[in-house]
Length: 340
Image (cartoon, rainbow, N blue to C red; front, side, top):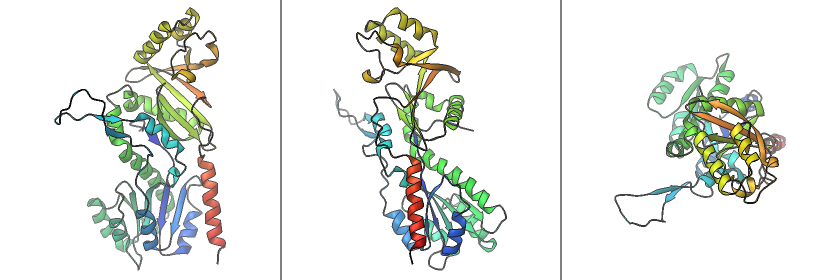
Protein backbone atom coordinates (compact mmCIF):
# COMPACT_ATOMS: atom_id res chain seq x y z
CA UNK A 1 0.00 0.00 0.00
CA UNK A 2 1.25 3.48 -0.88
CA UNK A 3 1.25 5.32 2.45
CA UNK A 4 2.45 8.75 1.33
CA UNK A 5 3.76 10.72 -1.60
CA UNK A 6 7.46 11.23 -1.04
CA UNK A 7 8.57 14.87 -1.52
CA UNK A 8 11.20 13.57 -3.93
CA UNK A 9 12.21 10.26 -5.43
CA UNK A 10 14.53 9.27 -8.25
CA UNK A 11 16.31 6.12 -9.45
CA UNK A 12 19.42 5.30 -7.47
CA UNK A 13 22.37 2.94 -7.74
CA UNK A 14 22.76 -0.50 -6.18
CA UNK A 15 26.25 -1.72 -5.30
CA UNK A 16 26.92 -5.47 -5.54
CA UNK A 17 29.91 -6.85 -3.67
CA UNK A 18 31.20 -10.41 -4.06
CA UNK A 19 34.73 -11.74 -4.32
CA UNK A 20 33.69 -13.82 -7.35
CA UNK A 21 33.73 -11.71 -10.51
CA UNK A 22 32.08 -14.60 -12.38
CA UNK A 23 29.16 -14.64 -9.94
CA UNK A 24 28.71 -10.87 -10.28
CA UNK A 25 28.82 -11.09 -14.07
CA UNK A 26 26.18 -13.83 -14.13
CA UNK A 27 24.00 -12.02 -11.58
CA UNK A 28 24.07 -8.78 -13.55
CA UNK A 29 22.37 -10.52 -16.47
CA UNK A 30 19.41 -11.47 -14.28
CA UNK A 31 18.72 -8.09 -12.69
CA UNK A 32 15.93 -5.69 -13.56
CA UNK A 33 17.03 -4.09 -16.87
CA UNK A 34 16.08 -0.65 -15.54
CA UNK A 35 18.31 -0.98 -12.48
CA UNK A 36 21.44 1.15 -12.18
CA UNK A 37 24.19 -0.84 -10.50
CA UNK A 38 27.91 -1.13 -9.90
CA UNK A 39 29.85 -4.35 -9.38
CA UNK A 40 32.74 -4.80 -6.96
CA UNK A 41 34.81 -7.96 -6.60
CA UNK A 42 36.96 -6.29 -3.94
CA UNK A 43 35.29 -5.36 -0.62
CA UNK A 44 37.98 -2.79 0.16
CA UNK A 45 37.46 -1.05 -3.19
CA UNK A 46 33.72 -1.09 -2.62
CA UNK A 47 34.10 0.53 0.81
CA UNK A 48 36.43 3.14 -0.62
CA UNK A 49 33.79 3.96 -3.24
CA UNK A 50 30.86 4.00 -0.81
CA UNK A 51 32.50 5.91 2.02
CA UNK A 52 34.23 8.35 -0.30
CA UNK A 53 30.94 9.73 -1.60
CA UNK A 54 29.28 12.78 -0.09
CA UNK A 55 25.98 12.14 1.68
CA UNK A 56 24.55 15.53 0.72
CA UNK A 57 21.71 15.29 -1.78
CA UNK A 58 20.82 18.92 -2.34
CA UNK A 59 23.02 21.72 -3.62
CA UNK A 60 21.00 24.05 -1.39
CA UNK A 61 20.03 22.95 2.13
CA UNK A 62 16.35 22.12 2.53
CA UNK A 63 16.36 23.22 6.19
CA UNK A 64 18.09 26.29 7.61
CA UNK A 65 17.60 28.76 10.49
CA UNK A 66 14.95 31.37 9.77
CA UNK A 67 16.80 34.67 10.07
CA UNK A 68 14.09 37.19 9.18
CA UNK A 69 12.64 37.51 12.67
CA UNK A 70 11.40 40.49 14.62
CA UNK A 71 12.21 38.98 18.01
CA UNK A 72 15.06 36.94 19.39
CA UNK A 73 14.20 34.11 21.73
CA UNK A 74 16.61 31.26 22.32
CA UNK A 75 13.74 29.13 23.60
CA UNK A 76 11.83 29.54 20.34
CA UNK A 77 13.91 28.55 17.34
CA UNK A 78 12.36 28.92 13.90
CA UNK A 79 13.51 26.69 11.06
CA UNK A 80 12.91 27.61 7.43
CA UNK A 81 12.32 24.97 4.76
CA UNK A 82 13.32 25.61 1.15
CA UNK A 83 10.74 23.86 -1.01
CA UNK A 84 12.58 25.18 -4.07
CA UNK A 85 15.65 23.21 -2.95
CA UNK A 86 13.63 20.01 -3.34
CA UNK A 87 12.69 20.77 -6.93
CA UNK A 88 16.25 21.84 -7.70
CA UNK A 89 17.42 18.27 -7.05
CA UNK A 90 16.42 17.47 -10.63
CA UNK A 91 19.27 19.67 -11.86
CA UNK A 92 21.84 17.52 -10.05
CA UNK A 93 23.27 15.42 -12.88
CA UNK A 94 24.81 12.96 -10.40
CA UNK A 95 21.58 12.23 -8.52
CA UNK A 96 21.25 8.77 -10.07
CA UNK A 97 24.71 7.87 -8.75
CA UNK A 98 23.49 8.00 -5.14
CA UNK A 99 23.87 4.51 -3.69
CA UNK A 100 20.69 3.45 -1.94
CA UNK A 101 21.28 -0.29 -1.51
CA UNK A 102 24.28 -2.55 -1.03
CA UNK A 103 24.03 -6.27 -1.81
CA UNK A 104 26.99 -8.13 -0.34
CA UNK A 105 28.00 -11.76 -0.05
CA UNK A 106 28.60 -12.95 3.48
CA UNK A 107 31.40 -15.42 2.77
CA UNK A 108 34.35 -13.42 1.41
CA UNK A 109 37.97 -14.10 2.43
CA UNK A 110 39.04 -10.45 2.57
CA UNK A 111 36.12 -9.24 4.70
CA UNK A 112 32.88 -10.99 5.60
CA UNK A 113 29.60 -9.40 4.65
CA UNK A 114 28.58 -8.39 8.17
CA UNK A 115 31.84 -6.61 8.87
CA UNK A 116 31.55 -4.94 5.48
CA UNK A 117 28.11 -3.59 6.41
CA UNK A 118 29.41 -2.41 9.76
CA UNK A 119 32.04 -0.27 8.00
CA UNK A 120 29.58 1.58 5.73
CA UNK A 121 29.40 5.14 7.05
CA UNK A 122 26.20 6.34 5.36
CA UNK A 123 23.31 5.26 7.64
CA UNK A 124 20.72 5.77 4.90
CA UNK A 125 22.12 2.97 2.72
CA UNK A 126 20.01 -0.20 2.96
CA UNK A 127 21.94 -3.46 3.30
CA UNK A 128 21.12 -6.89 1.87
CA UNK A 129 23.37 -9.86 2.63
CA UNK A 130 23.56 -13.02 0.52
CA UNK A 131 24.16 -16.05 2.70
CA UNK A 132 24.77 -19.76 2.47
CA UNK A 133 22.85 -22.15 4.69
CA UNK A 134 25.71 -22.36 7.18
CA UNK A 135 25.73 -18.57 7.61
CA UNK A 136 22.02 -18.18 8.24
CA UNK A 137 22.22 -17.93 12.04
CA UNK A 138 24.73 -15.07 11.72
CA UNK A 139 22.43 -13.29 9.27
CA UNK A 140 19.42 -13.65 11.57
CA UNK A 141 21.41 -12.24 14.49
CA UNK A 142 22.66 -9.30 12.39
CA UNK A 143 19.14 -8.59 11.14
CA UNK A 144 17.76 -8.57 14.67
CA UNK A 145 20.53 -6.19 15.74
CA UNK A 146 19.67 -3.81 12.89
CA UNK A 147 23.03 -4.19 11.18
CA UNK A 148 21.41 -5.44 7.96
CA UNK A 149 17.96 -4.89 6.48
CA UNK A 150 17.45 -8.17 4.64
CA UNK A 151 19.22 -11.47 4.05
CA UNK A 152 18.67 -13.83 1.14
CA UNK A 153 19.78 -17.43 0.83
CA UNK A 154 22.13 -17.35 -2.10
CA UNK A 155 21.54 -20.79 -3.57
CA UNK A 156 17.74 -21.05 -3.41
CA UNK A 157 15.89 -21.52 -6.69
CA UNK A 158 14.05 -18.19 -6.51
CA UNK A 159 16.98 -16.23 -5.05
CA UNK A 160 17.25 -13.77 -7.96
CA UNK A 161 13.51 -13.08 -7.99
CA UNK A 162 13.59 -12.55 -4.23
CA UNK A 163 16.61 -10.30 -4.61
CA UNK A 164 15.00 -8.11 -7.26
CA UNK A 165 11.94 -7.63 -5.04
CA UNK A 166 14.10 -6.93 -1.99
CA UNK A 167 16.06 -4.28 -3.90
CA UNK A 168 12.82 -2.58 -4.91
CA UNK A 169 11.62 -2.64 -1.29
CA UNK A 170 14.91 -1.32 0.03
CA UNK A 171 15.10 1.51 -2.49
CA UNK A 172 11.69 2.68 -1.28
CA UNK A 173 12.89 2.34 2.32
CA UNK A 174 15.90 4.48 1.43
CA UNK A 175 13.66 7.37 0.38
CA UNK A 176 11.38 6.78 3.36
CA UNK A 177 14.37 7.56 5.55
CA UNK A 178 15.67 10.43 3.42
CA UNK A 179 12.27 12.12 3.21
CA UNK A 180 10.79 11.45 6.65
CA UNK A 181 11.73 14.77 8.27
CA UNK A 182 10.72 16.79 5.22
CA UNK A 183 7.44 14.90 4.92
CA UNK A 184 6.56 15.47 8.57
CA UNK A 185 7.27 19.20 8.24
CA UNK A 186 5.20 19.51 5.07
CA UNK A 187 2.26 17.64 6.59
CA UNK A 188 1.27 20.73 8.60
CA UNK A 189 1.36 23.02 5.56
CA UNK A 190 -0.49 23.39 2.29
CA UNK A 191 1.36 20.23 1.22
CA UNK A 192 -0.65 18.06 3.62
CA UNK A 193 -1.92 16.17 0.56
CA UNK A 194 1.40 14.28 0.59
CA UNK A 195 0.18 12.21 3.54
CA UNK A 196 -3.25 11.43 2.11
CA UNK A 197 -2.99 7.67 1.61
CA UNK A 198 -5.82 7.46 -0.91
CA UNK A 199 -4.40 10.30 -2.99
CA UNK A 200 -0.93 8.73 -2.81
CA UNK A 201 -2.27 5.51 -4.31
CA UNK A 202 -4.10 7.46 -7.02
CA UNK A 203 -1.01 9.49 -7.88
CA UNK A 204 1.01 6.28 -8.11
CA UNK A 205 -1.49 5.03 -10.68
CA UNK A 206 -1.08 8.22 -12.70
CA UNK A 207 2.70 7.96 -12.50
CA UNK A 208 2.69 4.30 -13.55
CA UNK A 209 0.48 5.07 -16.55
CA UNK A 210 2.95 7.74 -17.70
CA UNK A 211 6.07 5.67 -17.07
CA UNK A 212 7.32 8.10 -14.43
CA UNK A 213 10.68 7.22 -12.87
CA UNK A 214 11.36 10.33 -10.77
CA UNK A 215 9.40 13.15 -9.15
CA UNK A 216 9.98 16.27 -7.07
CA UNK A 217 7.69 18.44 -4.99
CA UNK A 218 6.72 21.56 -6.90
CA UNK A 219 5.36 24.92 -5.86
CA UNK A 220 3.46 27.80 -7.44
CA UNK A 221 1.33 25.88 -8.26
CA UNK A 222 1.57 23.05 -5.73
CA UNK A 223 2.02 19.54 -7.01
CA UNK A 224 4.70 17.26 -8.39
CA UNK A 225 7.20 17.71 -11.19
CA UNK A 226 7.62 14.27 -12.77
CA UNK A 227 9.82 12.72 -15.47
CA UNK A 228 9.70 9.53 -17.47
CA UNK A 229 12.81 7.59 -18.45
CA UNK A 230 13.53 9.57 -21.61
CA UNK A 231 13.21 12.87 -19.76
CA UNK A 232 9.71 13.98 -20.75
CA UNK A 233 8.45 16.28 -18.01
CA UNK A 234 4.96 16.35 -16.54
CA UNK A 235 3.64 18.77 -13.94
CA UNK A 236 0.91 17.31 -11.76
CA UNK A 237 -0.97 20.35 -10.42
CA UNK A 238 -2.94 19.52 -7.26
CA UNK A 239 -5.51 21.84 -5.70
CA UNK A 240 -7.75 21.54 -2.67
CA UNK A 241 -10.94 23.55 -2.38
CA UNK A 242 -9.04 26.01 -0.18
CA UNK A 243 -6.15 26.56 -2.58
CA UNK A 244 -8.56 26.85 -5.50
CA UNK A 245 -10.43 29.59 -3.66
CA UNK A 246 -7.12 31.42 -3.33
CA UNK A 247 -6.54 31.16 -7.09
CA UNK A 248 -10.02 32.55 -7.70
CA UNK A 249 -9.65 35.43 -5.24
CA UNK A 250 -6.39 36.57 -6.82
CA UNK A 251 -7.92 36.25 -10.29
CA UNK A 252 -10.76 38.55 -9.21
CA UNK A 253 -8.25 41.05 -7.80
CA UNK A 254 -6.35 40.92 -11.10
CA UNK A 255 -9.47 41.72 -13.09
CA UNK A 256 -9.97 38.29 -14.64
CA UNK A 257 -12.95 38.13 -17.03
CA UNK A 258 -16.17 36.42 -15.98
CA UNK A 259 -15.54 33.74 -18.60
CA UNK A 260 -12.37 32.64 -16.81
CA UNK A 261 -14.07 32.58 -13.42
CA UNK A 262 -16.91 30.53 -14.88
CA UNK A 263 -14.46 28.00 -16.32
CA UNK A 264 -12.62 27.78 -13.00
CA UNK A 265 -15.88 27.31 -11.12
CA UNK A 266 -16.93 24.54 -13.50
CA UNK A 267 -13.95 22.43 -12.30
CA UNK A 268 -13.48 21.18 -15.87
CA UNK A 269 -9.98 22.62 -16.15
CA UNK A 270 -7.18 24.15 -14.12
CA UNK A 271 -4.83 27.00 -15.00
CA UNK A 272 -1.07 26.83 -15.17
CA UNK A 273 0.04 30.45 -15.37
CA UNK A 274 3.73 29.73 -15.64
CA UNK A 275 4.77 33.33 -16.22
CA UNK A 276 3.24 34.56 -12.94
CA UNK A 277 3.99 31.78 -10.44
CA UNK A 278 0.65 30.06 -10.95
CA UNK A 279 -1.61 33.08 -10.44
CA UNK A 280 -3.76 34.98 -12.90
CA UNK A 281 -1.68 37.59 -14.77
CA UNK A 282 -2.75 41.19 -14.63
CA UNK A 283 -4.47 42.42 -17.80
CA UNK A 284 -4.60 38.90 -19.25
CA UNK A 285 -7.48 38.43 -21.68
CA UNK A 286 -6.18 35.34 -23.53
CA UNK A 287 -6.38 32.88 -20.65
CA UNK A 288 -7.52 29.80 -22.59
CA UNK A 289 -4.01 28.58 -23.60
CA UNK A 290 -3.10 28.31 -19.92
CA UNK A 291 -5.95 25.91 -19.08
CA UNK A 292 -5.59 22.13 -18.79
CA UNK A 293 -8.22 19.38 -18.42
CA UNK A 294 -8.87 18.62 -14.76
CA UNK A 295 -10.06 15.58 -12.82
CA UNK A 296 -11.55 15.32 -9.36
CA UNK A 297 -10.48 12.91 -6.65
CA UNK A 298 -11.82 12.35 -3.14
CA UNK A 299 -9.39 11.28 -0.44
CA UNK A 300 -9.11 12.84 3.00
CA UNK A 301 -10.53 15.88 1.22
CA UNK A 302 -11.64 16.86 -2.26
CA UNK A 303 -8.93 17.51 -4.82
CA UNK A 304 -8.86 18.84 -8.35
CA UNK A 305 -5.78 18.00 -10.39
CA UNK A 306 -4.40 18.38 -13.89
CA UNK A 307 -1.43 16.87 -15.69
CA UNK A 308 0.57 19.35 -17.76
CA UNK A 309 2.89 17.71 -20.27
CA UNK A 310 6.17 19.54 -20.96
CA UNK A 311 5.38 22.46 -18.62
CA UNK A 312 6.83 25.79 -19.67
CA UNK A 313 8.87 28.12 -17.50
CA UNK A 314 10.87 25.58 -15.47
CA UNK A 315 14.23 25.59 -17.32
CA UNK A 316 14.33 21.82 -17.82
CA UNK A 317 16.27 21.60 -21.09
CA UNK A 318 19.47 20.39 -19.42
CA UNK A 319 17.94 17.80 -17.10
CA UNK A 320 19.69 14.43 -17.48
CA UNK A 321 17.18 11.65 -18.32
CA UNK A 322 17.51 8.35 -16.49
CA UNK A 323 17.68 6.31 -19.70
CA UNK A 324 20.74 8.27 -20.80
CA UNK A 325 22.37 7.56 -17.45
CA UNK A 326 21.69 3.83 -17.92
CA UNK A 327 23.23 3.94 -21.39
CA UNK A 328 26.36 5.51 -19.94
CA UNK A 329 26.55 2.84 -17.24
CA UNK A 330 26.18 0.10 -19.84
CA UNK A 331 29.09 1.55 -21.81
CA UNK A 332 31.24 1.69 -18.68
CA UNK A 333 30.44 -1.92 -17.76
CA UNK A 334 31.12 -3.10 -21.31
CA UNK A 335 34.43 -1.25 -21.36
CA UNK A 336 35.41 -2.89 -18.07
CA UNK A 337 34.58 -6.35 -19.43
CA UNK A 338 36.52 -5.69 -22.65
CA UNK A 339 39.63 -4.47 -20.84
CA UNK A 340 42.38 -7.07 -20.26
